[in-house]
Length: 266
Image 1: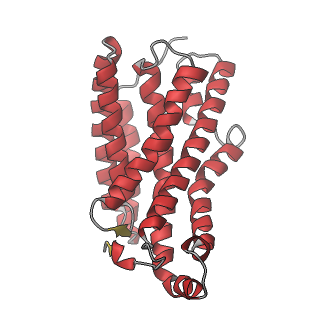
Image 2: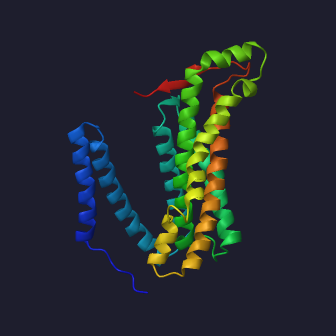
Image 3: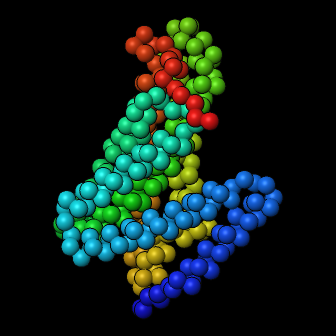
């Protein structure tokens, strides 16, 4: 099947729709027009650059180049998670936790998928490794960001309740258990909704891309099922890791809630 190429004019028409939406936002006072336009320009530049990088990488596969690109992706994702939080852990701790939680989940699951499930040889083949890692990091990033932001906000808002439970003799795990569970649910809801709606309400991106590229619909479906399961696992373990690590930093060795660890971003 021949893949239809898109021209700059085609992309310009799509961009015009975003400009019209930004104008509407300005007209009705939503205040989102600046963010829309900046995000649109940023996305365009980033995707064009990654397209050029991947073109070189696909032509000359290299383990070190793939690992270097994967590291950059991880570091940027960690920063995005950290930057989205209204109340953050002071210093570099919050950034390291965000990055570490995605390293534990996304990198491990991507490696498992490449070596066991997909079975590509070599395992670092960029046509498989980079897209898989990108999809896992992107979705894990959203889940971890939502859960982490809600955790720090809820701990700050309900600090009196948590401290009262601690005074009654509960451990920090018991005193913060309800909050931590709610935050984990918050981080997991988007991927659960995506799985529930896939194939009925929406056709996921990877499946659509493969079909447009000429792949068999059944092969595209199999890959999409694999990806959704991997994303769910990566998001879940990433959220669990982030919530646990942040919670440990909000309580000291004497089981006291230490909100001095948090700084508010206005």
